[in-house]
Amino acid sequence: MEIFYLIIAVIAIIILTTKLKIHAFLALFIISILYGIFAGMPYADIIVSINEGFGGTLGKIGLIIVLGVIIGAFLENTGGAFAIAEKVLKIIGSKRVPTAMGIIGYIVSIPVFADSGFMLLHPLNKSLSKKAKISIAGPAIALGLGLMASHTMVPPTPGPIAAAGILDADLGLVIAFGFPTSLVALIVGIIFAKKYASKTYIEPDVEDVLIAEKEIKDSPGALKSSIPILVPIVLIVLKSVLNPTRTGLDNGFIDFINFVGEPVISLLIGILLCLLLPKKLNYDMLSSSGWVGKAIKDAASIILITGAGGIFGKILQNSGIADILGQTLTEYNMGIFLPFVLAAAIKTAQGSSTVALVTTASIIMPMMSSLGFDSEIQKALVVIVIGAGSAVVSHANDSFFWVVTQMSGMNVKTGYRLFSLGSGLLGLTGAITVFIFYSIFA
Image 1: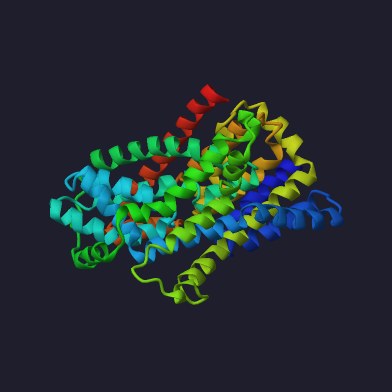
Image 2: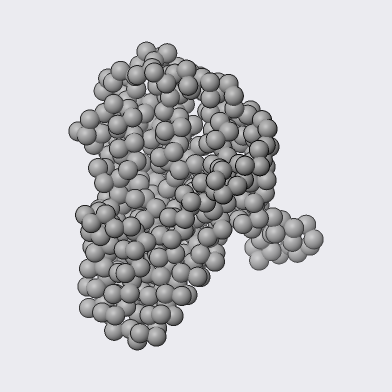
C-alpha cells in the first residue's frame, strides 16, 4: 500500500501544481503530511519528519542557493553576462551563431536562471542572426538548450545544488562529473539546432539590436565578469580533490582549502568578487530594495520548494517505504536509469526542472542504499542523471518553453517540434553519458 500511496502522492503533486496552479511548496508540504497519515505513521513522527526534513535540508543548501542567486543578479545587472557572450563570439566567430549562442547560454546559466538568461541574451541573439542573414530558429534553440544544459546539471545552479544537498552528494564531484556530462549534451543540442532547427526560417526582429550593443559596450570585461563564477567553482573542486580522507594529506594548507572550498564560503568569496563588476559601486545595490534584495526574493521560492522536498523525503524515509520500494525497483534492474525516468516523468508532467530535481531527489534519497548508490561517485552521478531527467521534456506547462518560443516568434506547433524535441534529446544524451561514467567509475 505504501507504494500505491507514493504513486498517488506524486500524481497529486503534479495535479496540484499544474491543473490547480498551487505553489509547489504548498503542494509538497500538504502531500507529505497526507502521505504520512495514510501510511500509518504516528503523528509525533510526522512532526519530527517535518522539522528534520525542512531544517536538515536547508541547513545544508539554503545559504548556497541564496549566494548563487546573488552572484547571478550582479552578472545580470552589470552586463557581465553580455561581456562573457561577446568574448565567446570573438573566439568562435560570429558566423557560427548557433554554436556561439549555445556555448554562451551554457556559461551564463551557471549563475543566472535560464529564463532570465534567455531574456538577457535574446537581443544579442537577434542581432547576430540578422547580421549573419540566417533564421533565428537555430540560434534560439541552441541558446535555449545551452541554458538548459547547465541549468539542470551544473552547480551552483539552484536545482542541482538542492538535489546534491538532499542526497548528501559531494558538490565538488557533482561539478566534476556535471561539466563533461552537460557539455556532451550541449554538443548534441547544438548539432540538433544547426542541422534541424535552423531549417525552419523565422525572420529575426531587429528592434532590440541597439539595446544589445549598448549593453555590451557598458559592461565590465569578460575576464573580470568570469572571475565570480570561476573562482568558487575552482575552490569547490579543489576541496573535493584534496579531501584528506581521499588523499591522506593533512596540513595547514589543506585545512585552508577545505575551509574556502566549502560551498558557502566559496560562493561568499564569489559575491565579494562581484563587487568589482559595477563601474561605480553603489551601496543601494546591496540594500533590501536593490540587486541583493531582489535576488533574495527570487531565491525564496526555490528555498521553500527545496525545504518542502526535504520534508517529503524525510517522511518517505521514516515511513519505511525505502526498503519496500528499493526491493521492488531493484527487481526491474533499471540501475542508474531509475532516477532519470522518475525525473523525466515529473518534469514532463508539471513543467519545472527545479521541482523535478527536488521531488525526484526526495523520493530517491531514502532508498539510495537499497538501490546500491553508496559511494560518493555514485551519489554525484545520481544527482546528474536526475538533472538530465529534469530537462525531459520542456513543453507547454514549462514557463521556459514560452520564453523561448514567444520571444523567438515560434508558434506552439513549431515550439514542440524544435524546442521540446531538442530538450528531450538533451536530457537523453546526458543520461547516456552518465551511464557510461557509471560503468567506468562506479
